[in-house]
Amino acid sequence: MRIISNFLGEGRSQFVRDSHQKTKNRSEQNWYIGRYVNAGIMAHVIATTNMKGGVGKTTLCVNLAASLARNFGKRVLVVDLDTQISGTLSLMSPQEFVKCRKERRTLRQLISQTVDSSAEQIHDTAGAIRPYICEQKGLSLLPGDLDLYDDYMVSSFLHEQANADDADHDFQTAWEKLERTLVKGILEPVQNDYDFIILDCAPGYNLLTRSSFVASDFYLLPAKPEPLSIAGIQLLQRRIERLRQGYEDSEPIKIELLGIVFTMSGNLFTSRYYNQVMKRVQQDYSEQQIFKTQIPNDAQVSRAVDSFKPVILSNPTATGAKAFAKLTEEFLQKLEILTGTKEQKSRMSLSQME
Ligand SMILES: Nc1ncnc2c1ncn2[C@@H]1O[C@H](COP(=O)(O)OP(=O)(O)OP(=O)(O)O)[C@@H](O)[C@H]1O
Ligand SMILES: [Mg+2]
Image 1 (cartoon, rainbow, N blue to C red):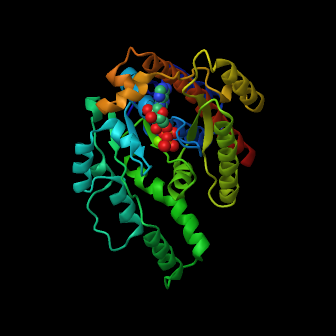
Image 2: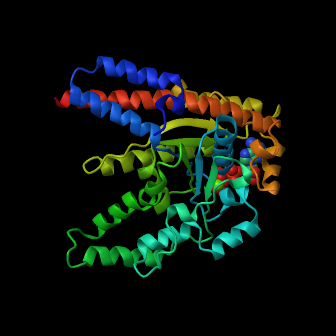
Image 3: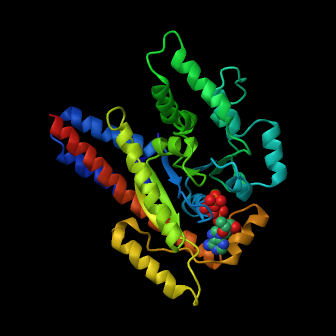
């Protein structure tokens, strides 16, 4: 078992000690400590998402993952949920990807095994994961695919589920069940093997994105400082709120905003405009919800894709790489604060039950 203080630093174990002293009831105490121990061994699942395309979701996902592994010694899994496979091709060459695809070691195989009863069970989740990706210790990838699922197959699966003899649910319930379990079911077997699982979501709002939200503890929202990108933030937040309401009466979902990250921030010509947009965001969101570190527009960041490695690994002294390293520190600090708050909230609701 890993030691709690190893996870996010001494602060966390201090928090455990404090709470241990404050809790009065023994069963509550055990439950509470158990939550922390679990939190210590189970990965935090983080979705990088924005409804809008081209805002830097994938670049943030792979650089944050690489930085957590390289600079902080964390065990990190990147999951590529986008059929554009940009995340996969940011971490491996097309030749390697073709090999993975031939061996059916991609997310597609795992999804098929869930939604197609006739699919051969070839790999479990661990078997589809590529460890030591980019030759970086601690960094792993669950490769995406050019098609992740077939709409027709999903519809017939849901139809089958809803019409099975022993079915106690209708089509809508079958749909919700799939949304709730698809990504969660794929991640669960490996959740103890990582400190972080970072999901690279496609733009828009498809089944996999919703299912990722249900499986996630937090989401990171990269945004370009432009009005349309800001509209993307608001749209996404509304959708997540609706998703949350939909699950309120069954199994409440945990996902919370970890923060908005401004990406591709401008040069001298655009900085005035950038500042105007930033001001608008600051009016709508609290200081804690916006990362202080911004990722500058840096050609080295996009060029890194040619080496099939994120800039943080291929050129760690580049301006963009340094910004990602700084962002990672802020990410860990925010996470520590938010996980503490989450646990305190759970504890409060537990004591209210008594
Ligand atoms: N900080 C940066 N500096 C320069 N170029 C960047 C930076 N961040 C991302 N890019 C480039 O911008 C483009 C879009 O980035 P990325 O693919 O990360 O966005 P995305 O939101 O994942 O896109 P999509 O919605 O298509 O999945 C890419 O060509 C990427 O290399
Ligand atoms: Mg992307």
